[in-house]
Length: 236
Image (cartoon, rainbow, N blue to C red; front, side, top):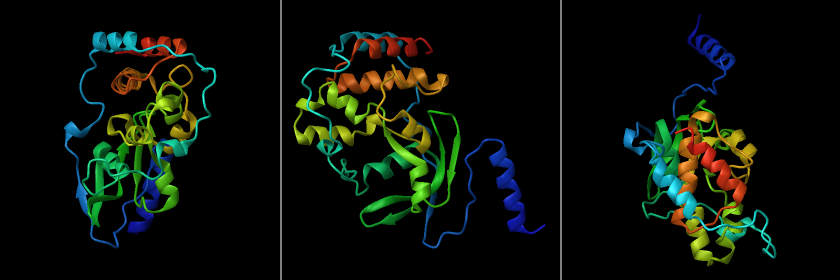
């Protein structure tokens, strides 16, 4: 059996097992395989549940559908991903590198880690995501950078009154960004925890991150959102 045939059989078997897979192919451009350190994992470390519950209780309360709110527009938070930390790479590449299990990168302009391909563990579903060419549009859409607290959720819970610069900073806040499965991110859309939750094993970390983000940015929470977050902290 030839090498290509063997690889084809392996892909089929893994796909049947429910894995998102692809096969490493030779790179046309020079690339570096990088394994991010364990400390780069954004959900690493235990959750301080009493502190999270305290922060949740301290959030201001907002109506689920505030009266008189100006309609949300994505453009209010800026356009393309920014290079907020000045390292030459935009936030998408920074998050892809930070959250990867293994990743291939190349220098591109001022960015030393333009992400070409890699492997990720989707926190929302627990699935393993493997991609060979993130410059290919379909693969690029299959792994997305999610705003844990969605921009429209931030808008209705306080960001509508912010300056454009503050909204752009929120949209590019690394602490509120995760590399996740694209279709799952689309199903989440702009829902809050009262309407959408990740897999049970990630709900504690998800709730803690949601609360931390809202606390750090002085955003409010509605009653159903607050109840859902309290329930999710119960899985810690």
